[in-house]
Length: 130
Image 1 (cartoon, one colour):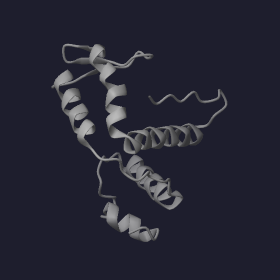
Image 2 (tube, helix red, strand yellow; image 1 turned 90 degrees about the horizontal axis):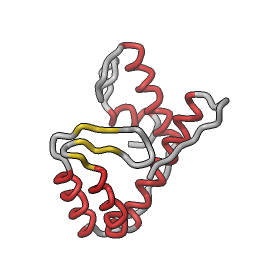
Image 3 (cartoon, helix red, strand yellow; image 1 turned 180 degrees about the vertical axis):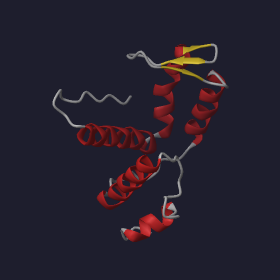
Image 4 (cartoon, helix red, strand yellow; image 1 turned 30 degrees about the vertical axis):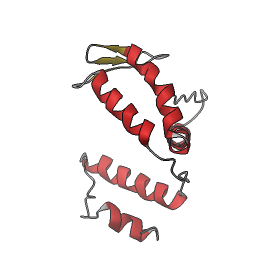
């Protein structure tokens, strides 16, 4: 699972960077061996109380609409999935995403489209990644 324990003096950008690396590492564990990942994740069945998922080792609880049925669907897909190439971090894409988040924070919007009308494809082309 994803665990990030930032230093007491870590700034928000450093914490976000640590979290991004932790998420990427977890995604790559799944991509490397989806079937084995499914076996590890099946223990989450025990974490459901009806439609509420209570994550182990934290106080995080998520109310779902589907309950454990959606987890089982996901696990079945992972069991039959072929391994995939690992994903690498791109500084250019990361910077583009950070700029988009800052743009939307200023406007208060929540969208894939920037305040200038830019789409993800346009923003990636600006940094030479699309």
